[in-house]
Every structure is written in structure tokens, then in C-alpha cells.
Length: 529
Image (cartoon, rainbow, N blue to C red; front, side, top):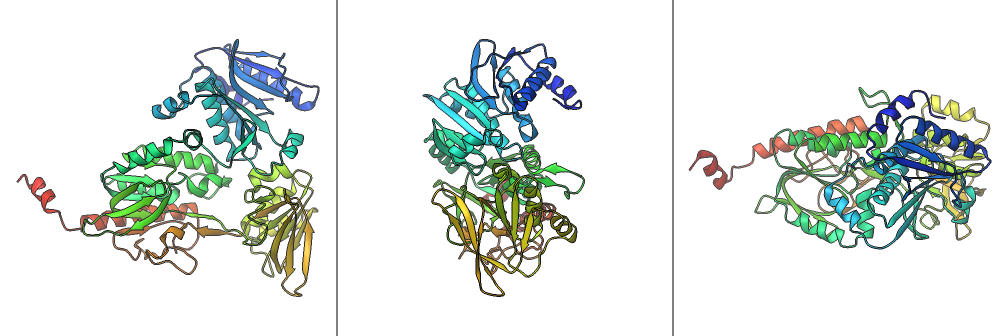
């Protein structure tokens, strides 16, 4: 079952086990059960501290639990945790075996202090890049707190369960049988939802922080680069981000980041965060900025957060990135997560054998249609313009697929549904003016990005597209406030460009700081007076 190249790596990891680990499987007579039996046998063969039992009696077949001999630690995989979830499997083995978790001590204490009983179920797909963070967070919480249990369910394998709960997007998390959350979540996100006082405590903590020399707002590639370049100048640097990693977390394959031939978004985001934290940078994650107040008499800019806390800084770098552009048509909001999707890699497997549509004929839309064509029964791609805008090689590949229909001059006018989930879409032919209906079960929107700058309207100069206007130095219309990345007017929204723009903005901020008038008290201190 395991690839030969993986076995030496797994053996090396399992040498870190401090306690014996027992895998208890509940199997059937199907092919997936046979593969699970083989997988568990391969794992046990990699370490004498891992044993396997095949006498489990769980309702889901095939599935297996991870614990210690005689101790149920509340971790179960219903399905084969391969693909993106193989790392989740390895981490669960290590943590169940006593290997210390790599999270802050404060978070460990908060998890252990959670009272009561918490039964989580996460529905995932093996191609989803957002799912592993949720799975790994809840598995770790189960290890640390005996009141927490977590089952990871492969939605593609347990289709009946997925359909009965009308799950049309992953990851979808249920707590004690009720919907808990959807989309990417880490330990901090989950704790914030379970521990209602956590957000208040964090806001109080932030409110006590001294002013920064450079405050970076946003934790994507531009923000990470800005933080690193600022910190290397030896000045007090902070990063406040709603989600460290930004859009990169939702990016599948990355093959154009120079010097890295191939990587994945979450892996690159983790590397960026690790690089930032290698310096003395104060990273404040899960914090959303909602107002920028330009510097007054004290020379300090203020960034107010949705939590109620405020941060002050002598200079600010805005790198808030962008988000998926929505259609803005009737039915879209109603059926988000119920057939209206934005990530084909994550949610595509849930529509196996069904009919779907992709809106958008650029590279991302055509790539999505190609990927989905290998999973679903049929793909209809709709493009507003008269021709597709994707690269010629992608268009050629798309048109070679027998289960894809391309419709141009199509203006999507409504998303249709039965009140519970999507069952079609309506579009207008821009040439004839006629309205047409397409029957389908899923809709993937791939029509570009919108800058995350709504909170800045009326504060500084924005373009007609909502992008922050910057000059070649990354300066905005407010002295001391700089901007970088996809939220700005810089053309070509690419990771490598955002990184360069972030570095440039930080260098411009430093140049601004060293040219500010020297405070009299500071001058006296430096001179030894």
C-alpha cells in the first residue's frame, strides 16, 4: 500500500514514538477495507511500537482508531488517509505516541482546560488542501483532552452519509451532531469558537502592546516579506493578520516561485510563517483590521481591530490581499456551500458522477474545468466574453475532453436551487438576448479577485477597482503608510511579485522612518545627556 519511498521516511518518524500505539480497525469485505488492512500492516511493520487489531466494531466501515493499548484516545479515520491527509495520519501517530505537539504552551493549557464532552466529525476530501489543518488540529485536541473525540470521514468514500447531511463543500465540521464550521480552521480558530473568553483575553493582550516601528497588516506573501525585511533592520515589527498565509493557503500547485520548482500553497505558507517567526516579529493572527486612523500629533498611525483592540505604529504596510470575486446574482449567497463553490480541488470529489458548471474562461476557470472533467459526469464552462482568455495550451486540452461543453457570450443571471441545494443556473446569451437554463448539481466560480480594501474606503486613495493606489516606492496617499501585493494597483497578481513588493514597501517604510525628525527625549538619551 505504502510507496517504497515513503517507508524509510515513516520509519524515521516513528522512531520518535515514546509510547506504544495501537491501531484498531473495523473492516468490511470491500476493496477499500482490503487497502486499509494493507496500509495498517505497512505502518506496523515500520515500528515495533505500533500494533494492529482487526476486531473493531465501529458503525463506519472501513475505519480505524489510533490510541494506546487499552486506551481510546478519541482519534478515528473513516477512510484511507492518503494524499494530503497522509501527514495528518503521521502526526496523529506521533502525538498519540507521546511526541510533544508544536503549538504554544498557552494553547495547550486552553485545550486541556475545556470542560465537557465534544464529539467532532470532519468531512474531507483527499484532494483538499484546506482539510489537513482542520483534521490535524482536532486530532491534537483529542490527544490533549480526553473529553474531545474526532472522526475524520472521507466524503468520497462515504457518499451516503455526505448526501444525507447535504454536505457540498469541505472541510465541513460537525460538533455533537450539529454543524460547527466550514473551511480552513486551525487550533486557534477552533479554540476561539469553543472558549468564548479567548477573544476577549486576546484583545486585552493586544491593547497593552507598545507602538511598533512598522506594523504590517496582512499575512500573505507580501506581508511576510515586509515583516522579514523590516525585522532585519532591527526595528520593532508587528504583523496583524486575519489569516496568516492569505490566498496562498487556498492555492494548489505552485510551479512558478523562483528556485522552488514545485510546491503547494499550505506548504509555502507554513514556510513563510516559520521564516517570519525566525525574527523578532510580533505575529497577531486571527485579527481583522476594520479602520485605519492616520497619524496625528503623536506621529502614530492607529489600526483598529474588529475585536475592539487597537495597535499603533510609526509606519504601516498594508498587504491585505484579495478574495474570490463573486457573481453577485440571485441565489449565489443562498447556496454558498450548498453547491456554489470556489475551490475545485477541495470540493470537486463531492460531485463525483454529477453535472457541474465552471464560471470563467481565464486560466483558473479552464484549469478547474479540466480537473473536474476527470471526476464528474459533465462540465459546462461559461464565459462572458466571446472567446476564452486562458493560455492556448490549456484551451487545447479543454477542448479535447469529451465531457466538457464551452459556452461563450454567456452572462450568468441566477443560481437555481430547491431550497436546500443547487439544481441549476440561468444565463443570458449576450448575442440573442435569450435566457437559458442548465441543470446541474454544482457551480464553481472562477472569475478573478477583489482586493480586501473595503475597510479603507474614504481613508486613502483607491482605484476604481478598489485597489490601493501606490507609486513605484509602495507609498500610498498617506505619508508613512505603504502598501504591497494583490490589494494594490501593481499589475500581475503573482506570489513572486507580491513578495518583491512587500520587501520594497518595508524598505520604503524604513527609509521614511530614518528621515523623521528625531524626538528630543530620544536624542538626549542617545547623546548621553
